[in-house]
Length: 346
Image 1 (cartoon, rainbow, N blue to C red):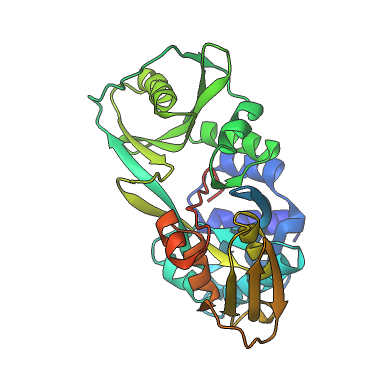
Image 2 (cartoon, rainbow, N blue to C red; image 1 turned 30 degrees about the horizontal axis):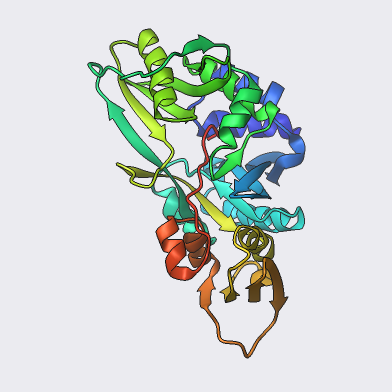
């Protein structure tokens, strides 16, 4: 059985997806080189995808992996097959130069499962709800325009910390949202520049806005107002980017550090004044164990030091410090920032 057919069968048996979505994914988005699999008697019985994404952290960029479609045949569960694949994925990620591996658990209980491997909650959305009677207060002049990748990319890069989508990722996301019965739309300002964009799909009796990008609050209201014209009788549930005072933070994904040195290089680039001596512990990735010294915008590694430690933490705790509110960063003397990860295959 070839990999495409085997993984497609696993997806069909394990996930609530349509034949149309399967046809789209395996003809357009599937990349065999990103698949990790386990076979039994010539049949793929467990698999996951490890896709590559760029991630923006302030003024720096890192390469990351994204685990998607983790699934095991029902009769093969409980044998540790997925645990082995996740460990293999972490090792491959480090070898590929990925600083992190991210994922979105398919259910709430799986958050606890992934914690066994050093994953921790760092991605959140600020979930805002608008009743069907809500009217968006639009100030200024905007007009609806066709969506395009350049406008999307420019708005996405305005975020301080976020997973970045390539042109192919963008095209796949548009196709995915349309397959789910939703829409992707944009608005432009008087200069013709795209200043707001939204991806949304019906979810039971609500309209779920899976991504909202905008230059400011007015542009955000403008694109939501355009959505209102198409879905006038639905409540809106908006997965917004957390601001300085979020209304309702909801977990939306996890991360796992696979290369501490690469991550701290990005952290140091964002604060050349930071002075840290950090000992890190990692039970799964030996190369992450040791002392990392941040000074003058650079990072050096040593097995041990007599210098006073500023932090002595495991990889999960380090993730929670780096990917947090700026207030937390101030306490620890690091440029902390809340990241976002949206429009991912999940």
